[in-house]
Length: 526
Image (cartoon, rainbow, N blue to C red):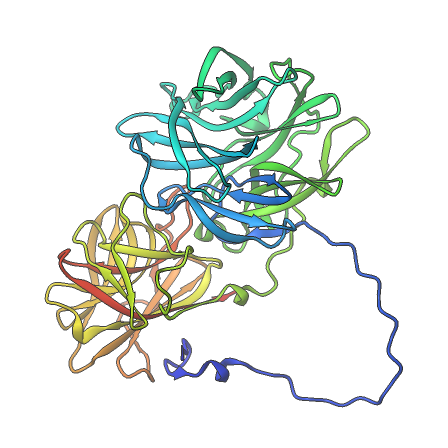
């Protein structure tokens, strides 16, 4: 069975399938087969919030990951055989975080040599600074062993990238996060001791932000060797949010330690009518063609969905510089976002890999009898499991076992920027409440008293990521809107500066209790 978000009624899956009427045509000789059109790789390949993507080819299979920020599980691992279709197969840190860090899980880089896979990544030391660390595994899908941080400067160190120099010596290239303190942002390189996985010797500055388009920073280094040069693809200016000014540049050098020459045509990757603020990616080659897997905001959803993973093809020009067509991403927007609709009936042995939780706060979950049982928490917003959003306009709904809720326990659904900023519709103690949570302060906007219902279905409607309405159904057939003083609630405050909105299932209350969810559905609209 599926829940009809339009009418509120339960409908069979077959009822949601619409077939075109059959037609007949006169018999004709079969047409000669058309030659297949050349495959165009430029496309959105990681829809949803997947910033700072990395890509590596391992034994003929492509592997990718991306920033997790403050959502677990940390660092998703995707694989693909064609660069276009990607399958989420595992995470670098699926359950527990490394003991030394607790937040800001950014910019993983996959590196594979001699049968071993390494993931260099950024995280923040507990009570300390942003640092670049490394984990390793015998297989790209894991399990991974963490080896701790390599470097953590006073201003912070981020965006680590491993590369061998022209002599075969392994180095780490990273960015000093000086912009966080109003300082410049040098890109450093330093040798890695391959036995200890620690830095050794002296660090060398490769270059820093000194061009007007780069603004307050250069970052996101990704280096590839082509012919006689090392080429560093990098990003400059403000990465994130409504007022971002991000763009991509490239520099080259015959020796890894320089001198480095920036491309006269920088920035080589900029905005267009579909994508905004492209940058921070890693290079891949396939069949003699060259690509950058990078992120950008879609103009119709921007910060509400987040920075999405795009594959952009480039060519080498006569002067030996990479060029993107029209200096911008050529990926088309998804023509049918309904392919990313979600119908979750909780029929498996455990939640699938697309479910998320606030980093460091993985809740207890159990799937039984086609229900998700989510253990409650009284911290912040409560226990949360969430899904990424794919469009800024959508409807989402869940059904909870209302009659079985223990006293003092609330369950519901929310549009969540983080546990401190959310709009949530929750039920418990015989009442349905609309919570407005901003900067950790929770207010009840409106509430409805409920009597005599066993199950309760809750719905969120969002328009452009900015306006939200909430409704409920007690009989599975009709919707009742939550009473508001205006048509909708303003949710423009929800997205954090570096993340998109998630849709979360919430269990709030004593940890000895739980909430039973019967279904979760998401319907995307353009």
